[in-house]
Length: 111
Image (cartoon, rainbow, N blue to C red; front, side, top):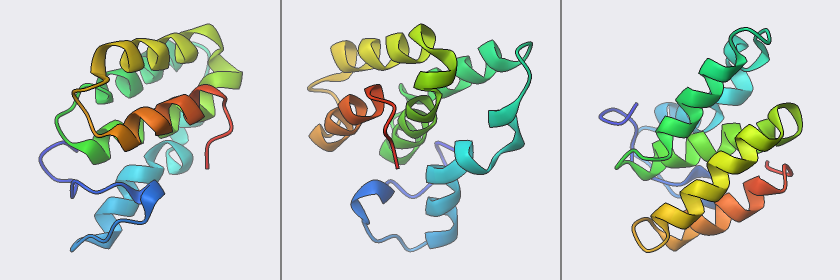
């Protein structure tokens, strides 16, 4: 997604010249059947979401945070830890809106 997704934040309703791609990037973990995978594949799915947090594309970072936010209740410590590490490592390196979104995702109450 990094080279293809428009670098906009959907949770802030930022406009994009490629709205369908923006929406798919943002909602990937809501719409993907992978998000409802078995316990066997779940660690891999979490790893993919976490790796998205280190993309240079803000939309991909937002997608990873969105997925992890939905995973806090299901994956518990693993999802929360990934978000905490992101906040600690990326504050000052990414848009402030992403850090705020991460703190919201950490609660598990993500939309």
